[in-house]
Image (cartoon, one colour):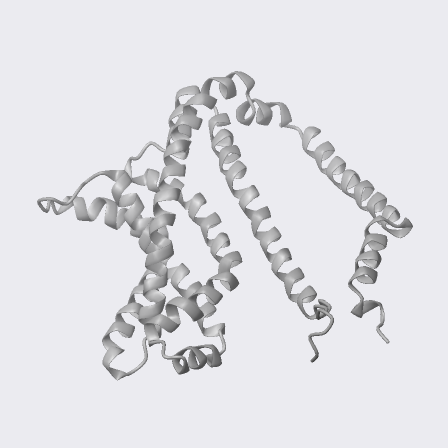
Length: 297
């Protein structure tokens, strides 16, 4: 005899009734009403503050917004390019560092030590300091053949910083895979490298997708730090326009552009987490597949 929790149709029905039943309608009404009340109260307090008119003109000036918008948007393309190029480098390099740190045996002690020092240093230094030291220090040496382009060193700095964090995410994912997976792969004749490539790492990556996406949200925001090297990206352009107009509306424009990228990424993280949770819950409840007649046991 199976209860409702063992029956997928009954479980789906209970979820539908929970989402769309009478109690759910009451909950939605209370939620919406309380949200409108709180936000309305906050808006009333802000709008009725003594300096609201000056504040609104300084940060939300319509003329300055329309004038600065296309210039800040054009500069934001550089932020997107920085993000995409750095992300494409961070994913493989972070995995490489994680594998370096997990190599077994005394012969690989120097390799593990290098990986530990790298991750500790890059995670311990402020990001703006790494960007400044690399972008200003290395070109200052004037080594023949070494580029001095701000975009190049911005990508290098962001890659080094975030690869340290991503490598720890990868390492946690790899260590979360039960050792029996590696043992089974090795018993089938796979080498240590093949076991990592075909068995352990694919499972680990599926588990660490949400924290990786969180790191890339931070990466997108930190592209603004490259402006300290002189690269005219969105925040730098907004500062230039703000100084020219004696108004901070362009700074608000830059903030809006970053939000248009980071908020969808945050919702994507929530969706991935919810999907993985649903898969874990629904997996054990899935009914066994019916065997065709005449197949015996």
